[in-house]
Image (cartoon, rainbow over all chains, first blue to last red; front, side):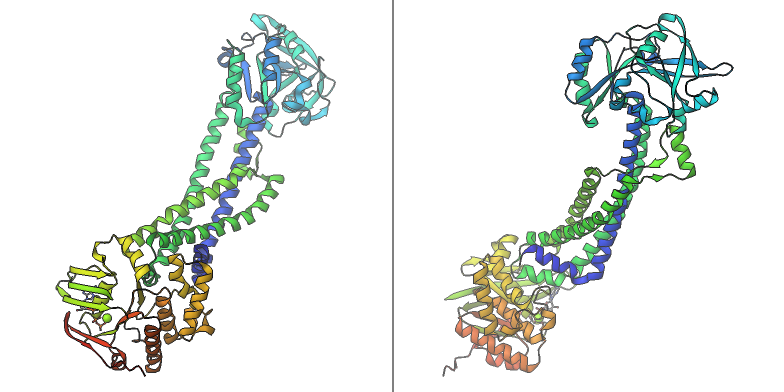
Length: 397
Length: 233
Ligand SMILES: Nc1ncnc2c1ncn2[C@@H]1O[C@H](COP(=O)(O)OP(=O)(O)OP(=O)(O)O)[C@@H](O)[C@H]1O
Ligand SMILES: [Mg+2]
């Protein structure tokens, strides 16, 4: 009889106890996969939103722009630079941006906000703003029209085809102003972002700010964001004298928020696993204690202690395995459902998320790491717990 | 051929307040094919002596030499392996592994020895038939009577043809009929397979079957009688 069979039979000697232990692992795995799926999914959504609409995964800037955010700290992007970045592996798109602050007016009322010059032809590969256009139409490349975010449009009483007045300080202190036709209104899912300002073609922005051919940044998107470090290192070599920042440097608040939130989530998962771990340990202690006589007979007739330890190790592992597999069997369909149907957060929590500028939803991720991590944790717990019978067998018999 | 020699064997239990000399200077030798009973009052040291011989307990003084090997000199894991290949055990109770069938219990030691599956299966059925339990081969111990369980234990101890079999009151939990049939089986196997049996007992009828009777009292051997009347018809 092999050890797996022997261990398997031993497990079912006390069917009820084994089932209770398995059930505790089952619930632990379901809860922790759901939780880590939710955390990962929500963070991924936040990152996606932030990165796509405001920063990109990597930006090339003038070194002083990071501090000043001033339209004076622009640079001229050499066509060869853009081309060489574009050719870098895993870079999907390089788009010019010229952004600054301005006052918007439509006659009587005035509001402040951002002017963001973009390259409309790359929109689908970057921000996908056309998705958020609620009225009117998207920008045309080289056109003079602008997109206005909904809150600004509302407070200035602007509609499609109206004209918006933009007043700002241009490159090197020149006063700049312009009249722009509103081609569309943008309505983001998070209210805070609807206070943002206007989007226009980068050419129109250069004209407005008297910064001919200049940009505040090159916004770079990549195919796999986990490789950002490597890609940004390559781009640094291509852009001497310029500063290259990845999304974590560009969004330090977001990174802080996610890290804080993740560590409190992980703490909860950790406590959950500790409770489960002690449950399994209790079962194993009983399993060893009630089999003392039998173990003595087994060693008397010639079974080496490492074999007994192996038997208990397999028993512990089997309990863990049954728990993990049944847990996954329940959590995979659940997560599959929630990936497509994110949960809307209730009142207070929704407020908090909105204040940070995030969608007030819990998103779920079906990334393999969500499942693999739980399986590894249970495996490690089983390994640690099976030390008990190993030590016990060594000492007592 | 001599299989076992005990030289100046002493076992003192020191763990309680009182020092107990459970085995006191025992010198004995055992020949291949012996069928020996160890008798004596309760607390005289029978179990202790058998446990020392089987290497389940360490002696305080003296030597145990099995087939030329001084088992006191073996490392713990070597001792377990030595038992595996040289000594068969039958205990008073709880002999069998509850999650294994009778046959799997019999195969267990052969499997630990690394005997291949075909051979194991053949030998286990052969030996289970010899103890009259061929039909119960696939029953778990809980489904067997006490006497049947002890017969399985004897079959298991015998399966690998060890140098000798140590049995500590193998019949103590059995009614007289089961005890008698177990003894008959042990006798038969002793003759057929020429395996040495050393067993302790309280039971006069069991003693009557022995061909050598060693009596211990307070840890001493007080008599060692070889019964010459080997009634081979
Ligand atoms: N683990 C132990 N610790 C201390 N003393 C022990 C231990 N085991 C046995 N003894 C003592 O050693 C002596 C011999 O005991 P042993 O069990 O060998 O006797 P026995 O002849 O087998 O008795 P019985 O016929 O009742 O089984 C007894 O006085 C007993 O109290
Ligand atoms: Mg005894």
